[in-house]
Length: 449
Ligand SMILES: Nc1nc2c(c(=O)[nH]1)N[C@H]1C(S)=C(S)[C@@H](COP(=O)(O)O)O[C@H]1N2
Ligand SMILES: [Mo]
Image (cartoon, rainbow, N blue to C red; front, side, top):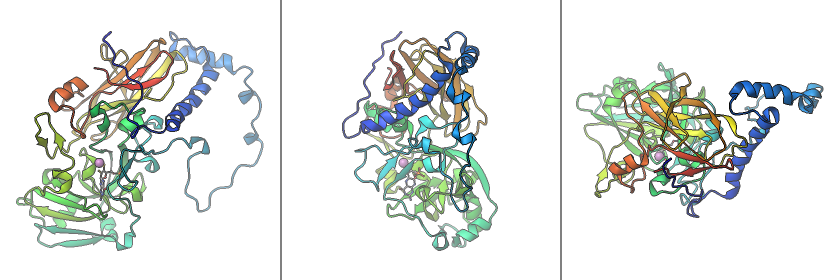
């Protein structure tokens, strides 16, 4: 086996999550594993699910949790909520968005990361969607909100929310990933959990109107007008250039819906741009203006920020597409495997260029690969869930996933990415992530070279 450059889950003090946060993840995990262990105790590796089944039967004998009727089978439960908004179980309190102290100076220009290690399937519950604000969020009155369409158009128009919601709508599932996701890893900083390495990533069903429809209503000049500028309604002067080719495809949405309800204020209520496959910064929140123009604007968030510093000192600009990427979410950093034997390796894969075609998983640091099962549905520019059964022999193991998209793009190793991009970037790190499972069962972030 190749050498593993294992490092402790230590990051510079100003970035390391408080210790209790890391432990919370491990304990939450442990809670579930304890349950599994209690029920399935000595399930041996070789038998896999069958032996787990046999053990479950044996262990069930004498278990008071099944033999004695719990209080909730004998009493009166809670009343239905008459005007309440449902909340998760109190037992799930540890599943939260978390900020990384020291990463940014203020809570208004900051990030909260989604707890990828605790989520199933592909949809991010709206209350756990990551947040990235440059100047804080607002809960805007939808009756006062307006969207202006101007620039190279016959008739400049102003839409109210009522106007927009009367138009035919579409609903589509897409991922959104901040261009800076996994950014600390460029500098070889191993943040402790997948929440901090990959948690600037979420996926929702978005509902709204294709932007091209609004441009057509305004009589946009689509031959001269090769670009559109999207402007946000917060104080960050957030403006981004969107190529007309993307808009013309009908994929770019002016969205008000997220997972069946209105957008959350943190995510741009009442209106945001959805630009499938493109980095999060272009998904302008609290959207208030679209201007059609004949060249890119080169605004601060595309000339100074969100550019990639290359090894020769030049900058790559407008590298907006989020290339094919994947990560194992369990087992992942901060979790603990309590037993040898059967485990399910699971994770997420995505590509800004279309559908995920294949995900391979290695448990020996990239020497051998097995094809993972992709859970349906597999949708374009959307998260795809993969999983693979694994029998852990109790020895150290380096777990990795490698995604391939429908264009044939293969997710790179760190060595491959750095050979082209160097180490001074912040944005667009789509390298293969490695998790080291130690003999103790503790999992940590390592960069396997
Ligand atoms: N108006 C406005 N739009 C914005 C931002 C912002 O600060 N202001 N942040 C951008 C960035 S950098 C990202 S990654 C995404 C984050 O979206 P989310 O907070 O819904 O996760 O919104 C983008 N749109
Ligand atoms: Mo971002």
